[in-house]
Image 1 (cartoon, rainbow, N blue to C red):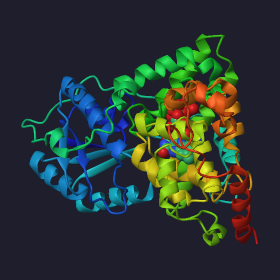
Image 2: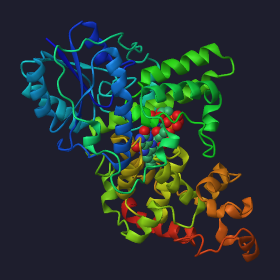
Image 3: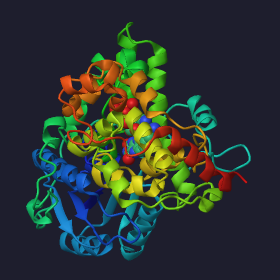
Length: 476
Ligand code: FAD
C-alpha cells in the first residue's frame, strides 16, 4: 500500500532519507505537510516563520509535482489529519525524519499510537551526530560544548548524504490538498515582511545556491569573516537549516569537497565551520535532556534574579531606538530582513540582559517572532548562554561594552550606516557613540539627538553597575 511521507522540518528532496527510502520501495508515495496550530506544547510559529514557510512550500510543491507525486497540504491536529489521510489513500506505512525537541517527540509518539495498523519508519536526517545517543563517560549529558565536540570530532558523521529520489509514484487517486493561500501564513494587514524577499530565496534551490556561493567565496576566510557584520561572509544558511531545506550532511559534505579541491581553503577553516554546525547538535542535545530549557533558567540560581520590567525600554530595544547605534542597527536588521548576524545577536542579547536588565525570555520571544531561522533549541540555548543563565554560559559579570564592541566589529561603520541611515553622515569617530560628539559634528551630519535619533536610553557605566548589583543575589 501507499506510504505517507510526513514532512516537517525537512522541506527538501535532496538528502531526505524518509522520502528517498519511500521512493525506493516503488510503492505510491503521498508527501504531506500539516499546518498544526494545536500541537500540544509545540510553540506556535512566529510571524517571520510563517512568511518563510509559505515561500518554502511554494518552492517545494512544483518540485514534488515534477517528481511525480504532488504535495498534499492539510490543516488541523496532526494525529487526526494523518488518521483521515491514511484512510483516504489506504496507506500502510508512514515515513518520517526524526525530530528531537521533546514536544515533537511526544507528538510523533502520539501519532504512532493512533495509527496502530501502519508501519512507521523514522530516519536520521537533521543532525550530524545523533544528539540523543551521545553521553559522557559517566552516562550523563554534556552541559559544555567543548567536550561534546571533542567526543564527536573523532567519529565520522552519522551517515553520508543521499541523492534526491529520481521519481515518485503517486497513488491512483490523489487526495485533496488545501490551497496554500487558505493557510493565511503571509502578513494579512500590514506587510511588515515586504523587504524579506530581497534578502532570501526560501526553498531548496535557494539553499543549495547559497551553499555553493558560501563555499566558493567565503569558506576560505570563514572565522574572521563571520565576525564582520558589514559583510555577508557567514553562510547565512540558518533559515535553510531551520526548515530543513538543506541537510547538515549535505552542507558539511559540500564544504569538505571544496576544501579538498582548493588549496586556498585551509583545513582549519573547514574545522571552524564544522564546529559551528555542531552547535546545532549540541543545543538539541541539551534540549533533549532539559525539556524546559525554553522557559526555565538552566542554572536555577538565576530564579532569584530580579529582572526589571520596562515596556518602553523593551520596545525601544525591539524597534532599534535605544540610542546605541550598534544595537539599533542590529535590531533593525532583524526587523527588516528577518535575520541577524551572529555577533550582533550576542551584542543585543547582552545589552537587553545586562544594560536593560530585562529577562532573557522577553528577548527570546522577540527573536522567535522576528527571525526566519528562529529555532527552538538554538534560540533558547543561545539566549541562556548569553544571559549567563545557561550551563556553558558567558558569565553574567562579563558585560559587553556596546561602544567598544561597535568599534571593534564595525570599525568602518558600514553596518551601522546601512541600517541606521539617519546617522550615515557622521564621521567614524562619532558614529559609535554620537552623544559624545560635539554639536558642530552632529549639526554637520544633520543629526539632532533626541529628535532625528534618540539619546541613549541608559548610561552604560551606570547600567553595568546596576547589573552587577542585581547579580549579587544570584552569586550569594
Ligand atoms: P554560520 O556561521 O555560517 O554557521 C553555519 C550554521 O551553523 C548556521 O546556519 C547554524 O545552523 C549553525 N550555527 C552557527 N552558530 C550557531 C550557534 N551558536 N548555535 C547553534 N547553531 C549555530 N541560530 C539559529 O539557527 N536559530 C536561532 O533561533 C538562533 N538564535 C540565536 C540567539 C542568540 C541570542 C544567539 C547569540 C545566537 C543564535 N543563533 C541561532 C546562533 C547563530 O547566531 C546563528 O545560527 C547564525 O548567526 C546563523 O548565521 P549563519 O547561517 O550565517 O551561520
